[in-house]
Image 1 (tube, rainbow, N blue to C red):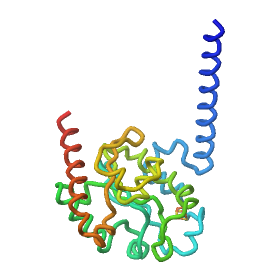
Image 2 (image 1 turned 60 degrees about the vertical axis):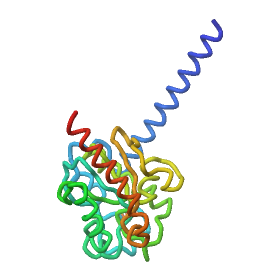
Image 3 (image 1 turned 90 degrees about the vertical axis):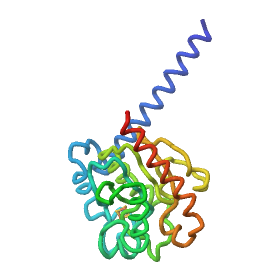
Image 4 (image 1 turned 135 degrees about the vertical axis):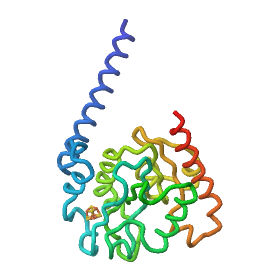
Amino acid sequence: MELKQMGTNDSTRRLSAHLLELKLHLMHLKRLGLYGLKKGGLSGVRSSLGECHRCELAQTRRNIVFGNGNPRARVVLVGEAPGAEEDRTGIAFVGAAGKLLTRMLAAIGLDRDDVYICNVLKCRPPNNRDPLPEEVAVCSPFLKAQLETIHPDLVLTLGAYAARTLLGREGALSRLRGRRLQYSGMKLIATYHPSYLLRNPGAKAEAWKDLKLVAGELDRRKMT
Ligand code: SF4
């Protein structure tokens, strides 16, 4: 009887802790202006971001690179942060890496207009340095709101930062890529960033395997 009572108390404590966690999360989303945005669509998320100065990258960016593509895409691609060309134009994945990405998509029968493309950070880090944890913490809720709004079948992360941010895990990309994972009810496949592939063409064969996983997943969903 006592054991049963202890079990009930434990469950109640766990439930209270989860509810508190949820409440804090909702308060955080409200503070960012991201609560209840689904009805406003992507433009609602963009409005909430505004002329963002939430981190120091606002001092050095030329343009916020929010993301572009099909707002009803079945596949969303997530990179790390804008580079020089993206910062100049305000468009995600232009320049040499963007061209390679376009070819990678074409290899599995996708056009850039079929997908939505964005990054973890919406502003360029100076000299393309790695994102800082505090920048990821403050900017990634907007990425997550974009994904919740589009709710694609599949998220393809490009590079380690995007995979780690969405999966909430540390670790080398080599341990995350090459398999089907889950993010918030969506399939997630991790692969290399096209910039990495430009510097390391030897990794293209592995990236091709990841793309075949993407194609297989999309085919499987077409049939169900
Ligand atoms: S990187 Fe994100 S959080 Fe930082 S200023 Fe740009 S939009 Fe705001």
